[in-house]
Length: 340
Image 1 (spheres, rainbow, N blue to C red):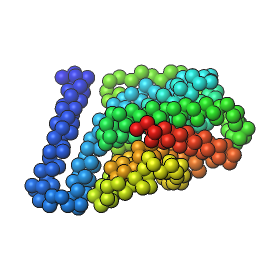
Image 2: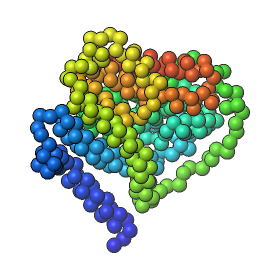
Image 3: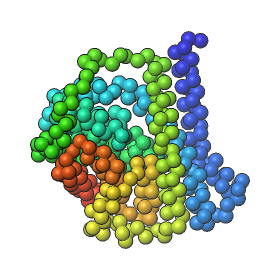
Image 4: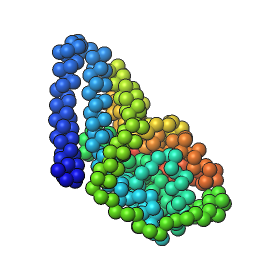
């Protein structure tokens, strides 16, 4: 059997196995909980255990399949190609392109400075650079997969659209304000060796290997957050009375959105840890816009990321950046509370 045919056969077999597992997961969990370990029905503890046992494998299965294919897609969007695509782009078109590229480009807090330096050195405008830096952590495959798996396509699409708007408009505002003088001077003194050659095309097996590596790397890093977040969410699901969160994070509480954003800024988590908690909060009466605002603030304006960016940005720029993004998130929160 030729190597490429063998690879395709293995992928097809894996997809069939994944589909069978995912379709039958809920039935298997209920049978395990109430027939094998014989949990009592209508019990808070039973509800917690069932929620946890079902959600953990469901989310991990979704992560594996999506991260695998996104890993393949990312072989066509390396940081070098991204810099070339964004170089020389300005105004609103550059912000839109940067925000869209942020969805499919590898990014984490630890890579914020290298990406920032590479973009600035390549001639990417400051505002366009920040559209990318905001979009990449906010609208990553982990967030989209978890939202789709827990809330469905409508909420996932709302989140992606809102994230893109925030990234585009925040980057545009930063560009309009012309904050270059508030970037640390040493940033503009760097002259690295940027390759002008295009990245070599990858064959099928290399693309598949990139997908497998993405699964090992990303899922391997986020699974503890998934388990912890679902554990917290399960506790809220089982023990917090329905409607409790409506008094704190409900539609009728006008101050809930800015307070949720303010609470989210100093916290540190990622999508894998915060989305299961968000799901439980919504079940207990929290408004969608307020919950989305809290989640976005935690992911985009986390304290570790701010500390990392402080190495390349002056304090005034950091304050302006937080203010612009937090204002955008707050407006999105109010908008969705009003619409939904």
